[in-house]
Every structure is written in C-alpha cells, then in structure tokens.
Image (cartoon, rainbow, N blue to C red; front, side):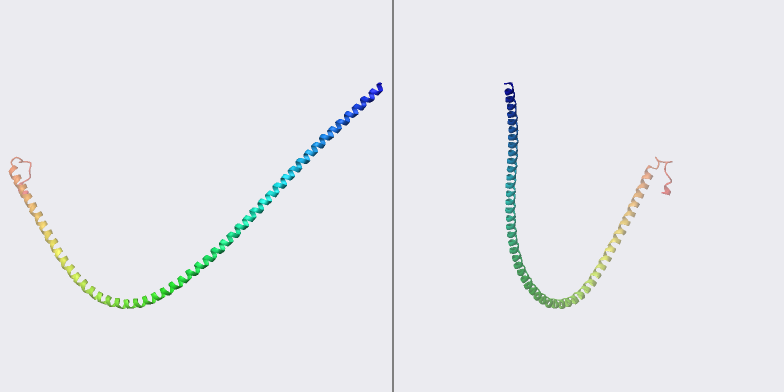
Length: 194
C-alpha cells in the first residue's frame, strides 16, 4: 500500500508537472497568438494608412494636374489676348505715325513761311528798337542831367542852411557870453578870441 501510495503520489506529481507544462505552453501560445494578432493588426493598420496616403497623394496629384491644366489654359488665353492687344496697339501706332508725319510735313511748310515772315519782322523790329533805344538814351541823359542839377541845388541849399545855422548859433553864443560875462569874469577866455 505504501508503494501504491508512493506511485500515486509520483503519478500525481507527474500529472501536476504535465499540467504546469501544458499551462505554460498554453500561456506561451496565447501570448504568441496575441503578439501575432497585434502584429497583424499593426500591419493591417499600416497597410490602410499607406493606402489612404497613396489615395490622398493620388488625389492631390490629380488636383495639381487639373490646376496646372487650368493655369495653362488661362495662360494661353491671356497670351492670345495680349497678342490681340499688341496687334491693335501696333495698328494704332502705325496710324498715329502716319498722322504725325503728315502733320510734321504741313508744320515744316508752315514753319518755313513763319520763319520768312519772322525774319522780315525781326529786321523791322531791330530798326525800330535801335531808334527807340536812341530816343530812350537821350531821354535818360536829359533826366540824369536834370536830377544831377536838382541834387546839386539841394546840396547847395543844405550847405547854405548849415552855414546860416552855424552863424545863428555863433551869434547867440556871443550874445549870451556878453550878457553873462560879468558873472563869469576870470572863468572865460577873451571874447575877441571867439
């Protein structure tokens, strides 16, 4: 019985050991399955993101191409419009040039006639100017002489007034000295010297 118990005990230990191994194996398998599942999920998510990125890039590229095509069409339209405008401008310039040339020819003819008339008028004007200048010179000389004579008269008159003033002052001084001489005797110089 002891031996049987011992064998049962050994058998139970073996079974327990086997159960432990089986449990560890299951845990390891579950962990591996979880890791694989997680990796598959990551791969799937990365694939989806990559597909979305590629789709987004494709749309962006398509939009850029459409935008570029529109820009090309707009540039072509603008170029054609500019060419049309340039032609119109060139045509207007040619018409203006013809008009200007005609006007210049007419002006040259008119200018030649004007120049001839101007030269005739200049000769007459020069002769008139010389006569007027001579007359003005004579008038200025006459006025200068009159002004000079007037100034000379003014200067003579002022000189005479100054001389008269000095005479009056000297006479008044002499009279005052004569009146007050007795009071100032010994303080004044000789009256004859004044």
